[in-house]
Image (cartoon, rainbow over all chains, first blue to last red; front, side):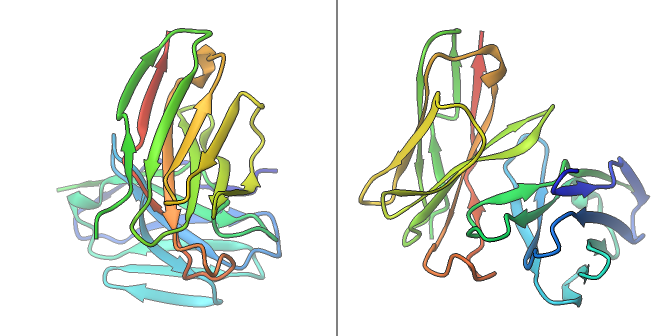
Length: 113
Length: 117
């Protein structure tokens, strides 16, 4: 079982819709969770992190964490064509530093006008 | 504040050669991690350095090595290159002073695209 798994996508939504990206993790001891955005040909860019159960909002982005079910999701409200990218979920190795992240394979999101 | 920089940005080598990649972290950051990204395997952790010491190591063969200098700049070396080493190599830096705190987040450089022929 992979440490981090993401719904493979690709995901395509119209402009203005809500995009929902999901991620599950295998180690119940995981405490921190990160979402990175990666545009084609570019490096990953941190957009959100969450470590408490519940929701965390930042602008149009909401991260949701459910430790009992071992999933973390990212909602993008009012999606824009500029949100078209691959979204990577990352979890630190339990017992290690945050400098060692396990990444999911990513979900490719396309927002069409 | 300047971001993470990596040099060179692109590199073409042939099998059997060795290569050295360089990473300069964000000013004040002392932790540097290296990742390999390929279409087949995604992003995989190579190693992390902090204060010139390797703090974590991923599951890569010994051909992959790294080091960190006193100014926190880091290099990684791949010896005896194989075709499968073709990848985007990413460096990420973080403050490193609270390595188990969720505030110690990583910021990535632009990467070095290595092609092995």
